[in-house]
Image 1 (tube, rainbow, N blue to C red):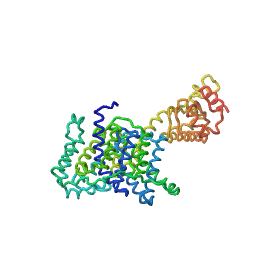
Image 2 (tube, one colour; image 1 turned 135 degrees about the vertical axis):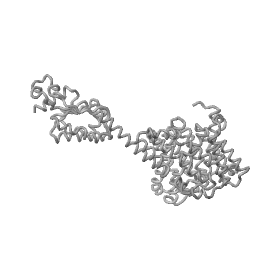
Image 3 (cartoon, rainbow, N blue to C red; image 1 turned 30 degrees about the vertical axis):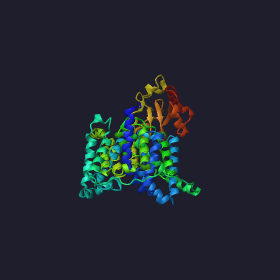
Image 4 (cartoon, rainbow, N blue to C red; image 1 turned 60 degrees about the vertical axis):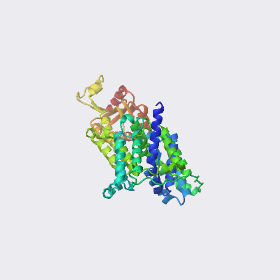
Length: 538
Protein backbone atom coordinates (compact mmCIF):
# COMPACT_ATOMS: atom_id res chain seq x y z
CA UNK A 1 0.00 0.00 0.00
CA UNK A 2 1.17 3.57 -0.67
CA UNK A 3 2.00 5.57 2.44
CA UNK A 4 0.70 9.13 2.29
CA UNK A 5 -0.51 11.88 4.62
CA UNK A 6 -3.96 10.32 4.88
CA UNK A 7 -2.49 6.98 5.97
CA UNK A 8 -0.17 8.70 8.46
CA UNK A 9 -3.09 10.62 9.96
CA UNK A 10 -5.08 7.40 10.36
CA UNK A 11 -2.14 5.63 11.99
CA UNK A 12 -1.56 8.47 14.46
CA UNK A 13 -5.27 8.70 15.35
CA UNK A 14 -5.49 4.93 15.67
CA UNK A 15 -2.43 4.68 17.90
CA UNK A 16 -3.52 7.58 20.12
CA UNK A 17 -7.07 6.25 20.53
CA UNK A 18 -5.79 2.75 21.31
CA UNK A 19 -3.32 4.14 23.86
CA UNK A 20 -6.04 6.02 25.74
CA UNK A 21 -8.23 2.92 25.75
CA UNK A 22 -5.24 0.82 26.89
CA UNK A 23 -4.43 2.97 29.92
CA UNK A 24 -6.97 1.67 32.44
CA UNK A 25 -6.72 -1.84 31.03
CA UNK A 26 -2.93 -1.98 31.40
CA UNK A 27 -3.06 -0.58 34.92
CA UNK A 28 -5.73 -3.07 35.96
CA UNK A 29 -3.89 -6.03 34.41
CA UNK A 30 -0.67 -5.00 36.15
CA UNK A 31 -2.38 -5.05 39.55
CA UNK A 32 -4.17 -8.34 38.80
CA UNK A 33 -0.91 -10.05 37.81
CA UNK A 34 0.72 -9.34 41.17
CA UNK A 35 3.52 -7.26 39.62
CA UNK A 36 1.89 -3.86 40.17
CA UNK A 37 0.21 -1.20 38.03
CA UNK A 38 3.55 0.07 36.65
CA UNK A 39 4.30 -3.41 35.25
CA UNK A 40 1.15 -3.19 33.15
CA UNK A 41 2.31 0.12 31.67
CA UNK A 42 5.84 -1.13 31.00
CA UNK A 43 4.48 -4.28 29.39
CA UNK A 44 2.14 -2.31 27.13
CA UNK A 45 5.02 -0.06 26.02
CA UNK A 46 7.58 -2.82 25.43
CA UNK A 47 5.34 -5.41 23.78
CA UNK A 48 3.39 -2.75 21.90
CA UNK A 49 6.51 -1.17 20.41
CA UNK A 50 8.62 -4.22 19.55
CA UNK A 51 5.73 -6.32 18.28
CA UNK A 52 4.76 -3.42 16.00
CA UNK A 53 8.30 -2.94 14.66
CA UNK A 54 9.31 -6.59 14.28
CA UNK A 55 5.91 -8.32 14.04
CA UNK A 56 4.08 -9.52 10.97
CA UNK A 57 0.63 -7.91 11.39
CA UNK A 58 0.65 -4.30 10.27
CA UNK A 59 -2.45 -3.06 12.09
CA UNK A 60 -2.22 -5.14 15.27
CA UNK A 61 -1.76 -3.48 18.66
CA UNK A 62 -0.15 -5.64 21.33
CA UNK A 63 -0.12 -5.31 25.10
CA UNK A 64 -1.22 -7.06 28.29
CA UNK A 65 -4.24 -9.32 27.75
CA UNK A 66 -6.52 -11.21 30.11
CA UNK A 67 -5.14 -14.72 29.31
CA UNK A 68 -1.52 -13.57 29.69
CA UNK A 69 -2.34 -11.74 32.92
CA UNK A 70 -3.97 -14.83 34.42
CA UNK A 71 -0.98 -16.94 33.37
CA UNK A 72 1.40 -14.41 34.91
CA UNK A 73 -0.55 -14.35 38.17
CA UNK A 74 -0.17 -18.15 38.38
CA UNK A 75 3.57 -17.87 37.68
CA UNK A 76 4.01 -15.23 40.40
CA UNK A 77 2.16 -17.28 43.02
CA UNK A 78 3.18 -20.82 42.06
CA UNK A 79 6.39 -20.97 40.01
CA UNK A 80 8.48 -18.09 41.37
CA UNK A 81 9.73 -17.15 44.83
CA UNK A 82 10.77 -13.61 43.93
CA UNK A 83 10.43 -10.95 41.22
CA UNK A 84 13.63 -11.98 39.44
CA UNK A 85 12.40 -15.54 38.94
CA UNK A 86 8.98 -14.36 37.71
CA UNK A 87 10.58 -12.05 35.15
CA UNK A 88 12.96 -14.81 34.08
CA UNK A 89 9.93 -16.88 33.06
CA UNK A 90 8.68 -13.94 30.99
CA UNK A 91 12.05 -13.61 29.22
CA UNK A 92 12.22 -17.37 28.59
CA UNK A 93 8.64 -17.33 27.26
CA UNK A 94 9.58 -14.56 24.82
CA UNK A 95 12.65 -16.49 23.69
CA UNK A 96 10.52 -19.59 23.05
CA UNK A 97 8.11 -17.48 20.98
CA UNK A 98 11.01 -16.33 18.82
CA UNK A 99 12.06 -19.97 18.36
CA UNK A 100 8.50 -20.90 17.39
CA UNK A 101 8.55 -18.18 14.75
CA UNK A 102 11.96 -19.20 13.43
CA UNK A 103 10.76 -22.82 13.15
CA UNK A 104 7.82 -21.59 11.03
CA UNK A 105 5.09 -22.97 13.29
CA UNK A 106 2.89 -19.91 12.82
CA UNK A 107 1.86 -20.71 9.26
CA UNK A 108 -0.59 -23.36 10.44
CA UNK A 109 -2.99 -20.72 11.80
CA UNK A 110 -3.90 -19.92 8.17
CA UNK A 111 -5.97 -23.11 8.08
CA UNK A 112 -8.53 -21.75 10.54
CA UNK A 113 -11.99 -21.91 8.83
CA UNK A 114 -13.97 -18.72 8.37
CA UNK A 115 -16.87 -19.90 10.56
CA UNK A 116 -14.42 -20.27 13.47
CA UNK A 117 -12.93 -16.81 12.85
CA UNK A 118 -16.43 -15.34 12.58
CA UNK A 119 -17.50 -17.05 15.79
CA UNK A 120 -14.68 -15.73 17.93
CA UNK A 121 -14.82 -12.28 16.29
CA UNK A 122 -18.49 -11.96 17.20
CA UNK A 123 -17.76 -13.43 20.62
CA UNK A 124 -15.06 -10.81 21.26
CA UNK A 125 -17.51 -8.08 20.25
CA UNK A 126 -20.15 -9.38 22.68
CA UNK A 127 -17.57 -9.65 25.49
CA UNK A 128 -16.50 -6.03 24.95
CA UNK A 129 -20.12 -4.87 25.12
CA UNK A 130 -20.96 -6.88 28.23
CA UNK A 131 -17.84 -5.85 30.15
CA UNK A 132 -18.31 -2.16 29.34
CA UNK A 133 -21.93 -1.98 30.49
CA UNK A 134 -20.74 -1.49 34.10
CA UNK A 135 -18.55 1.60 33.46
CA UNK A 136 -21.23 2.80 31.02
CA UNK A 137 -23.51 3.03 34.07
CA UNK A 138 -20.82 4.53 36.30
CA UNK A 139 -19.70 1.37 38.10
CA UNK A 140 -16.23 -0.28 38.17
CA UNK A 141 -15.59 -3.11 35.71
CA UNK A 142 -16.62 -6.42 37.26
CA UNK A 143 -13.54 -8.71 37.46
CA UNK A 144 -14.12 -12.12 35.93
CA UNK A 145 -15.06 -11.38 32.33
CA UNK A 146 -18.42 -11.51 30.60
CA UNK A 147 -20.05 -13.93 33.04
CA UNK A 148 -19.18 -11.73 36.03
CA UNK A 149 -20.47 -8.68 34.14
CA UNK A 150 -23.82 -10.37 33.53
CA UNK A 151 -24.13 -11.28 37.22
CA UNK A 152 -23.36 -7.71 38.28
CA UNK A 153 -25.94 -6.07 35.99
CA UNK A 154 -28.87 -6.08 38.46
CA UNK A 155 -26.79 -4.21 41.02
CA UNK A 156 -25.50 -1.80 38.38
CA UNK A 157 -28.99 -0.89 37.17
CA UNK A 158 -29.96 -0.14 40.75
CA UNK A 159 -27.03 2.24 41.31
CA UNK A 160 -26.69 4.18 38.07
CA UNK A 161 -24.39 7.20 38.10
CA UNK A 162 -26.43 9.59 35.97
CA UNK A 163 -23.43 11.72 35.02
CA UNK A 164 -21.44 8.74 33.82
CA UNK A 165 -24.46 7.39 31.97
CA UNK A 166 -25.00 10.74 30.21
CA UNK A 167 -21.31 10.99 29.24
CA UNK A 168 -21.26 7.44 27.92
CA UNK A 169 -24.51 7.92 26.00
CA UNK A 170 -23.20 11.10 24.32
CA UNK A 171 -19.91 9.37 23.49
CA UNK A 172 -21.74 6.38 22.00
CA UNK A 173 -24.08 8.63 20.00
CA UNK A 174 -21.15 10.58 18.55
CA UNK A 175 -19.48 7.30 17.60
CA UNK A 176 -22.55 6.14 15.69
CA UNK A 177 -23.65 9.46 14.20
CA UNK A 178 -20.33 11.02 13.16
CA UNK A 179 -20.58 11.45 9.35
CA UNK A 180 -18.58 8.94 7.35
CA UNK A 181 -17.35 11.63 4.98
CA UNK A 182 -15.65 13.44 7.89
CA UNK A 183 -14.03 10.29 9.27
CA UNK A 184 -11.12 10.69 6.82
CA UNK A 185 -10.13 13.87 8.67
CA UNK A 186 -11.19 13.00 12.23
CA UNK A 187 -12.01 9.36 13.07
CA UNK A 188 -15.24 8.81 14.97
CA UNK A 189 -13.58 7.23 18.07
CA UNK A 190 -11.29 10.25 18.48
CA UNK A 191 -14.16 12.72 18.11
CA UNK A 192 -16.21 10.70 20.61
CA UNK A 193 -13.27 10.72 23.02
CA UNK A 194 -12.92 14.51 22.80
CA UNK A 195 -16.68 15.16 23.10
CA UNK A 196 -17.17 12.83 26.07
CA UNK A 197 -14.08 14.13 27.88
CA UNK A 198 -15.12 17.78 27.48
CA UNK A 199 -18.59 16.94 28.78
CA UNK A 200 -17.10 15.22 31.83
CA UNK A 201 -14.45 17.83 32.58
CA UNK A 202 -16.62 20.93 32.04
CA UNK A 203 -20.04 19.88 33.34
CA UNK A 204 -20.54 16.35 34.65
CA UNK A 205 -17.43 16.17 36.83
CA UNK A 206 -18.73 13.61 39.34
CA UNK A 207 -18.27 10.66 36.95
CA UNK A 208 -15.41 8.21 37.74
CA UNK A 209 -12.17 8.98 35.85
CA UNK A 210 -9.02 7.10 34.85
CA UNK A 211 -7.12 8.48 37.83
CA UNK A 212 -3.47 8.34 38.78
CA UNK A 213 -0.98 6.83 36.31
CA UNK A 214 2.45 5.53 37.42
CA UNK A 215 5.36 7.63 36.11
CA UNK A 216 9.10 7.18 35.74
CA UNK A 217 11.39 5.13 33.50
CA UNK A 218 11.72 1.42 34.27
CA UNK A 219 15.03 -0.02 35.42
CA UNK A 220 16.67 -3.25 34.34
CA UNK A 221 15.21 -5.91 36.61
CA UNK A 222 16.76 -9.06 35.22
CA UNK A 223 19.41 -11.10 37.03
CA UNK A 224 20.84 -14.48 36.02
CA UNK A 225 18.96 -17.19 37.96
CA UNK A 226 20.26 -20.57 39.06
CA UNK A 227 20.46 -23.54 36.70
CA UNK A 228 17.96 -25.50 38.81
CA UNK A 229 15.38 -22.74 38.47
CA UNK A 230 15.89 -22.56 34.70
CA UNK A 231 14.92 -26.22 34.45
CA UNK A 232 11.80 -25.65 36.58
CA UNK A 233 10.91 -22.50 34.65
CA UNK A 234 10.82 -24.22 31.26
CA UNK A 235 7.26 -25.54 31.70
CA UNK A 236 5.58 -22.23 32.71
CA UNK A 237 7.65 -20.40 30.08
CA UNK A 238 6.42 -22.80 27.40
CA UNK A 239 2.80 -22.32 28.52
CA UNK A 240 3.28 -18.55 28.42
CA UNK A 241 4.83 -18.75 24.95
CA UNK A 242 2.11 -20.98 23.51
CA UNK A 243 -0.68 -18.92 25.06
CA UNK A 244 0.76 -15.64 23.79
CA UNK A 245 1.44 -17.08 20.34
CA UNK A 246 -2.02 -18.54 19.81
CA UNK A 247 -3.64 -15.40 21.22
CA UNK A 248 -1.64 -13.12 18.92
CA UNK A 249 -2.12 -15.17 15.76
CA UNK A 250 -5.88 -15.37 16.29
CA UNK A 251 -6.08 -11.60 16.63
CA UNK A 252 -3.96 -11.34 13.49
CA UNK A 253 -6.73 -13.21 11.68
CA UNK A 254 -9.25 -10.70 13.04
CA UNK A 255 -7.08 -7.84 11.76
CA UNK A 256 -6.79 -9.51 8.36
CA UNK A 257 -10.56 -9.91 8.06
CA UNK A 258 -11.13 -6.25 8.97
CA UNK A 259 -8.46 -4.73 6.75
CA UNK A 260 -8.30 -7.20 3.86
CA UNK A 261 -4.58 -7.73 4.42
CA UNK A 262 -2.44 -10.84 4.94
CA UNK A 263 -0.30 -11.13 8.05
CA UNK A 264 3.01 -13.00 8.30
CA UNK A 265 2.49 -15.45 11.15
CA UNK A 266 6.10 -16.52 11.72
CA UNK A 267 7.34 -12.95 11.75
CA UNK A 268 4.50 -12.09 14.14
CA UNK A 269 5.73 -14.72 16.62
CA UNK A 270 9.26 -13.33 16.41
CA UNK A 271 8.01 -9.79 17.07
CA UNK A 272 5.84 -10.88 20.00
CA UNK A 273 8.74 -12.86 21.43
CA UNK A 274 11.13 -9.91 21.24
CA UNK A 275 8.53 -7.68 22.90
CA UNK A 276 8.02 -10.11 25.77
CA UNK A 277 11.76 -10.56 26.27
CA UNK A 278 12.28 -6.78 26.54
CA UNK A 279 9.23 -6.47 28.81
CA UNK A 280 10.58 -9.14 31.16
CA UNK A 281 14.01 -7.51 31.28
CA UNK A 282 12.49 -4.24 32.53
CA UNK A 283 9.87 -5.58 34.92
CA UNK A 284 6.92 -5.46 32.55
CA UNK A 285 3.91 -7.72 32.14
CA UNK A 286 3.96 -10.20 29.23
CA UNK A 287 1.55 -9.45 26.43
CA UNK A 288 0.07 -10.54 23.14
CA UNK A 289 -2.08 -9.18 20.34
CA UNK A 290 -5.01 -7.41 21.98
CA UNK A 291 -8.45 -7.78 20.40
CA UNK A 292 -9.81 -4.59 21.97
CA UNK A 293 -6.82 -2.42 21.11
CA UNK A 294 -6.40 -3.86 17.62
CA UNK A 295 -10.02 -3.25 16.70
CA UNK A 296 -9.89 0.22 18.29
CA UNK A 297 -6.83 1.05 16.21
CA UNK A 298 -8.36 -0.20 12.96
CA UNK A 299 -11.68 1.58 13.55
CA UNK A 300 -9.83 4.83 14.25
CA UNK A 301 -7.93 4.55 10.97
CA UNK A 302 -4.75 2.65 11.88
CA UNK A 303 -3.53 0.46 9.02
CA UNK A 304 0.26 0.06 9.38
CA UNK A 305 2.85 -0.68 12.05
CA UNK A 306 3.26 3.09 12.52
CA UNK A 307 0.05 3.03 14.55
CA UNK A 308 1.58 0.48 16.94
CA UNK A 309 4.69 2.63 17.31
CA UNK A 310 2.53 5.71 18.02
CA UNK A 311 0.58 3.68 20.60
CA UNK A 312 3.75 2.72 22.48
CA UNK A 313 5.33 6.18 22.24
CA UNK A 314 2.23 7.89 23.65
CA UNK A 315 2.18 5.47 26.60
CA UNK A 316 5.89 6.18 27.11
CA UNK A 317 5.20 9.93 27.03
CA UNK A 318 2.52 9.45 29.68
CA UNK A 319 4.96 7.57 31.89
CA UNK A 320 7.54 10.34 31.39
CA UNK A 321 5.25 13.17 32.48
CA UNK A 322 2.12 13.65 30.35
CA UNK A 323 -0.07 11.56 32.65
CA UNK A 324 -1.87 14.57 34.26
CA UNK A 325 -3.43 15.41 30.89
CA UNK A 326 -5.05 11.99 30.61
CA UNK A 327 -6.04 11.26 34.21
CA UNK A 328 -9.28 13.38 34.06
CA UNK A 329 -10.79 11.31 31.20
CA UNK A 330 -14.00 9.67 32.48
CA UNK A 331 -14.18 5.87 32.35
CA UNK A 332 -17.63 6.29 30.81
CA UNK A 333 -16.03 7.83 27.72
CA UNK A 334 -13.94 4.72 27.19
CA UNK A 335 -17.02 2.56 27.78
CA UNK A 336 -18.95 4.40 25.09
CA UNK A 337 -16.09 4.06 22.60
CA UNK A 338 -15.58 0.37 23.36
CA UNK A 339 -19.27 -0.51 23.09
CA UNK A 340 -19.31 1.05 19.62
CA UNK A 341 -16.22 -0.97 18.76
CA UNK A 342 -17.87 -4.13 20.13
CA UNK A 343 -20.89 -3.58 17.90
CA UNK A 344 -18.64 -3.05 14.88
CA UNK A 345 -16.52 -6.17 15.42
CA UNK A 346 -19.52 -8.54 15.47
CA UNK A 347 -19.65 -10.31 12.10
CA UNK A 348 -23.07 -9.04 11.06
CA UNK A 349 -22.55 -10.15 7.46
CA UNK A 350 -22.38 -13.81 8.42
CA UNK A 351 -25.02 -13.49 11.15
CA UNK A 352 -27.44 -12.21 8.51
CA UNK A 353 -26.82 -15.43 6.56
CA UNK A 354 -27.18 -17.89 9.45
CA UNK A 355 -30.34 -19.38 7.96
CA UNK A 356 -28.39 -20.17 4.78
CA UNK A 357 -25.45 -21.93 6.43
CA UNK A 358 -25.13 -25.70 6.40
CA UNK A 359 -26.20 -27.14 9.74
CA UNK A 360 -22.71 -28.34 10.67
CA UNK A 361 -21.17 -24.94 9.89
CA UNK A 362 -23.90 -23.21 11.90
CA UNK A 363 -23.13 -25.42 14.90
CA UNK A 364 -19.40 -24.66 14.62
CA UNK A 365 -19.98 -20.91 14.41
CA UNK A 366 -22.44 -20.74 17.32
CA UNK A 367 -20.35 -23.07 19.48
CA UNK A 368 -17.23 -20.95 18.91
CA UNK A 369 -19.17 -17.78 19.69
CA UNK A 370 -20.68 -19.19 22.89
CA UNK A 371 -17.40 -20.61 24.18
CA UNK A 372 -15.60 -17.33 23.42
CA UNK A 373 -18.10 -15.40 25.53
CA UNK A 374 -18.62 -17.82 28.41
CA UNK A 375 -15.31 -19.75 28.60
CA UNK A 376 -12.25 -18.26 26.86
CA UNK A 377 -10.84 -17.57 23.41
CA UNK A 378 -8.30 -20.40 23.34
CA UNK A 379 -10.84 -23.07 24.33
CA UNK A 380 -13.35 -21.68 21.86
CA UNK A 381 -10.94 -21.83 18.94
CA UNK A 382 -9.61 -25.27 19.90
CA UNK A 383 -13.09 -26.79 20.05
CA UNK A 384 -14.18 -24.80 16.99
CA UNK A 385 -11.26 -26.19 14.99
CA UNK A 386 -12.04 -29.75 16.11
CA UNK A 387 -15.73 -29.37 15.23
CA UNK A 388 -14.90 -27.73 11.89
CA UNK A 389 -12.43 -30.51 11.12
CA UNK A 390 -15.07 -33.15 11.81
CA UNK A 391 -17.59 -31.33 9.61
CA UNK A 392 -14.98 -31.06 6.86
CA UNK A 393 -14.16 -34.76 7.23
CA UNK A 394 -17.80 -35.65 6.61
CA UNK A 395 -17.73 -33.74 3.35
CA UNK A 396 -14.44 -35.36 2.37
CA UNK A 397 -15.82 -38.81 3.14
CA UNK A 398 -18.64 -38.40 0.64
CA UNK A 399 -16.31 -36.98 -2.01
CA UNK A 400 -13.68 -39.66 -1.55
CA UNK A 401 -16.13 -42.56 -1.49
CA UNK A 402 -17.65 -41.28 -4.73
CA UNK A 403 -14.22 -41.87 -6.28
CA UNK A 404 -14.21 -45.59 -5.39
CA UNK A 405 -15.46 -47.90 -8.13
CA UNK A 406 -15.99 -51.63 -7.60
CA UNK A 407 -16.48 -53.34 -10.98
CA UNK A 408 -17.14 -57.05 -11.77
CA UNK A 409 -15.65 -58.22 -15.08
CA UNK A 410 -17.40 -60.89 -17.16
CA UNK A 411 -14.93 -63.57 -18.12
CA UNK A 412 -15.82 -63.29 -21.80
CA UNK A 413 -15.05 -59.54 -21.68
CA UNK A 414 -11.98 -59.51 -19.46
CA UNK A 415 -10.42 -62.56 -21.13
CA UNK A 416 -11.48 -61.75 -24.69
CA UNK A 417 -9.44 -63.88 -27.06
CA UNK A 418 -8.60 -66.42 -24.36
CA UNK A 419 -10.99 -69.22 -25.40
CA UNK A 420 -10.15 -71.53 -22.54
CA UNK A 421 -10.95 -68.76 -20.02
CA UNK A 422 -14.09 -67.27 -21.57
CA UNK A 423 -15.98 -70.30 -22.91
CA UNK A 424 -17.18 -72.01 -19.72
CA UNK A 425 -19.95 -69.69 -18.45
CA UNK A 426 -20.97 -66.60 -20.44
CA UNK A 427 -22.21 -64.92 -17.22
CA UNK A 428 -19.24 -65.77 -15.00
CA UNK A 429 -17.46 -62.81 -13.38
CA UNK A 430 -14.62 -64.39 -11.52
CA UNK A 431 -12.50 -61.21 -11.64
CA UNK A 432 -13.41 -57.91 -10.01
CA UNK A 433 -11.64 -54.59 -9.90
CA UNK A 434 -11.55 -52.02 -7.08
CA UNK A 435 -10.50 -48.73 -8.65
CA UNK A 436 -9.39 -45.94 -6.27
CA UNK A 437 -9.22 -42.48 -7.82
CA UNK A 438 -8.06 -39.22 -6.30
CA UNK A 439 -7.06 -38.94 -2.63
CA UNK A 440 -8.02 -41.07 0.36
CA UNK A 441 -7.65 -39.93 3.94
CA UNK A 442 -8.84 -40.77 7.43
CA UNK A 443 -12.18 -39.16 6.48
CA UNK A 444 -13.21 -42.08 4.27
CA UNK A 445 -10.83 -44.81 5.35
CA UNK A 446 -13.13 -46.66 7.72
CA UNK A 447 -16.06 -46.56 5.31
CA UNK A 448 -13.97 -48.27 2.63
CA UNK A 449 -14.32 -51.57 4.50
CA UNK A 450 -18.11 -51.33 4.45
CA UNK A 451 -18.32 -50.15 0.85
CA UNK A 452 -15.82 -52.57 -0.70
CA UNK A 453 -15.48 -55.45 1.73
CA UNK A 454 -18.71 -57.13 0.68
CA UNK A 455 -17.73 -57.06 -3.03
CA UNK A 456 -14.40 -58.80 -2.51
CA UNK A 457 -15.85 -62.19 -1.51
CA UNK A 458 -17.98 -62.31 -4.70
CA UNK A 459 -14.90 -62.85 -6.87
CA UNK A 460 -12.07 -65.33 -7.14
CA UNK A 461 -9.56 -62.62 -8.08
CA UNK A 462 -9.69 -58.92 -7.22
CA UNK A 463 -7.51 -56.24 -8.81
CA UNK A 464 -6.74 -53.21 -6.63
CA UNK A 465 -6.22 -50.47 -9.21
CA UNK A 466 -4.23 -47.45 -7.89
CA UNK A 467 -3.47 -45.95 -11.30
CA UNK A 468 -5.87 -43.05 -10.64
CA UNK A 469 -4.96 -42.53 -6.95
CA UNK A 470 -3.00 -39.39 -6.16
CA UNK A 471 -2.73 -39.49 -2.35
CA UNK A 472 -3.26 -42.04 0.41
CA UNK A 473 -2.68 -41.06 4.04
CA UNK A 474 -1.54 -43.47 6.76
CA UNK A 475 -5.08 -44.21 7.97
CA UNK A 476 -6.34 -45.07 4.49
CA UNK A 477 -3.22 -47.18 3.87
CA UNK A 478 -3.92 -49.26 6.96
CA UNK A 479 -7.51 -49.79 5.80
CA UNK A 480 -6.23 -50.95 2.40
CA UNK A 481 -4.23 -53.57 4.29
CA UNK A 482 -7.46 -54.60 6.05
CA UNK A 483 -9.16 -54.98 2.66
CA UNK A 484 -6.36 -57.29 1.58
CA UNK A 485 -6.83 -59.25 4.81
CA UNK A 486 -10.53 -59.59 3.94
CA UNK A 487 -9.51 -61.05 0.58
CA UNK A 488 -7.20 -63.53 2.27
CA UNK A 489 -9.94 -64.65 4.71
CA UNK A 490 -12.38 -65.13 1.83
CA UNK A 491 -9.71 -67.05 -0.13
CA UNK A 492 -9.85 -64.40 -2.84
CA UNK A 493 -6.63 -63.83 -4.72
CA UNK A 494 -5.69 -60.20 -5.36
CA UNK A 495 -3.46 -58.18 -7.64
CA UNK A 496 -2.11 -54.67 -7.05
CA UNK A 497 -1.97 -52.50 -10.17
CA UNK A 498 -0.78 -49.01 -11.10
CA UNK A 499 1.22 -48.07 -7.98
CA UNK A 500 3.35 -44.95 -8.38
CA UNK A 501 4.46 -41.72 -6.70
CA UNK A 502 3.50 -40.88 -3.13
CA UNK A 503 0.87 -43.63 -3.01
CA UNK A 504 3.52 -46.29 -3.67
CA UNK A 505 5.89 -44.63 -1.19
CA UNK A 506 3.25 -44.68 1.58
CA UNK A 507 2.26 -48.32 1.03
CA UNK A 508 5.86 -49.55 0.84
CA UNK A 509 6.97 -47.44 3.84
CA UNK A 510 4.21 -48.94 6.02
CA UNK A 511 4.92 -52.46 4.70
CA UNK A 512 1.34 -52.76 3.43
CA UNK A 513 2.55 -54.90 0.50
CA UNK A 514 4.68 -57.14 2.65
CA UNK A 515 4.06 -60.82 1.83
CA UNK A 516 2.55 -60.11 -1.60
CA UNK A 517 4.52 -61.90 -4.36
CA UNK A 518 6.30 -59.51 -6.70
CA UNK A 519 4.54 -60.91 -9.76
CA UNK A 520 1.18 -59.77 -8.33
CA UNK A 521 2.28 -56.12 -8.27
CA UNK A 522 1.82 -54.99 -11.87
CA UNK A 523 1.63 -51.76 -13.84
CA UNK A 524 -0.82 -52.38 -16.72
CA UNK A 525 -4.15 -54.10 -17.36
CA UNK A 526 -2.46 -56.54 -19.75
CA UNK A 527 -0.10 -57.66 -16.98
CA UNK A 528 -3.03 -57.92 -14.56
CA UNK A 529 -4.97 -60.07 -17.08
CA UNK A 530 -2.04 -62.46 -17.44
CA UNK A 531 -1.58 -62.83 -13.68
CA UNK A 532 -5.34 -63.31 -13.14
CA UNK A 533 -5.37 -66.04 -15.75
CA UNK A 534 -2.55 -67.92 -14.01
CA UNK A 535 -4.31 -67.57 -10.63
CA UNK A 536 -7.61 -68.91 -11.97
CA UNK A 537 -5.91 -71.84 -13.70
CA UNK A 538 -3.90 -72.85 -10.64
